[in-house]
Image (cartoon, rainbow, N blue to C red; front, side, top):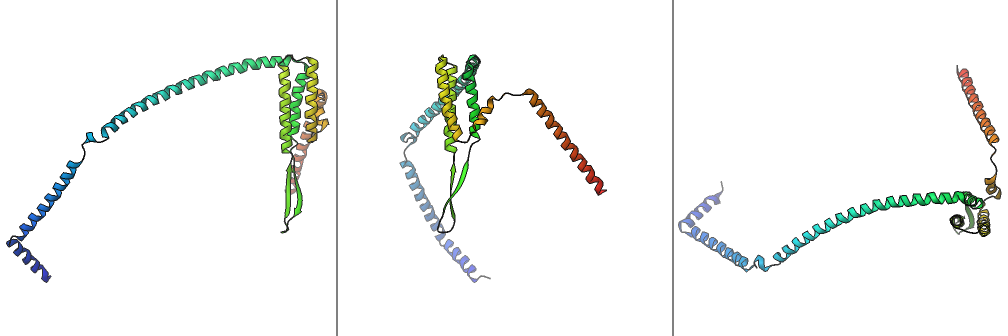
Length: 253
């Protein structure tokens, strides 16, 4: 039992009897009233909505929203126009390329043989150059740790230059196919172009006999005989494999 409980109850009873509790409540109410008046005064001191930037900002926001809607519609319209023009451009480009390509092929077919052959031969030479890529690893010295210091060299830069020169030569020959160049002048220029790129290609390792083989006539009869011999060899090989499998099975049994 708490001995202070009775004393506290008696104290509040006497305080109430003497009116002290009511007096305290009144003071508390007065303090709350004063605080409320202070808050009301602060509220009255605030500017009205019309006195702030709210009206102007609201109008600006509305105007910005309308501008955004107009911009979005303009974007959609521009996008539609772009897509329409892109389709028309693509179709027109196809028609242009098809018409030009047909005429260029016709001009190529009617060009002098030496120009058509030179154009094709340079393509073949370009493929031979592509096979000449080389990487060389060379031991230069030993450092103080005893590790080998090596140096890697490659002919890739020379190959890139050679490919570019062959491409330029083919472009020039193609231009002569599509222009009215005197035969003697065209032949002399083709010879000069060929001499330069052939020399460059041979320096990279292309063999002259490999490039010359492009003009070797095709023996149709020999081709047929070679194909038949190859097929017969394949059949013999298959028969030998079957006999070997049968023999191995017999041994296991």
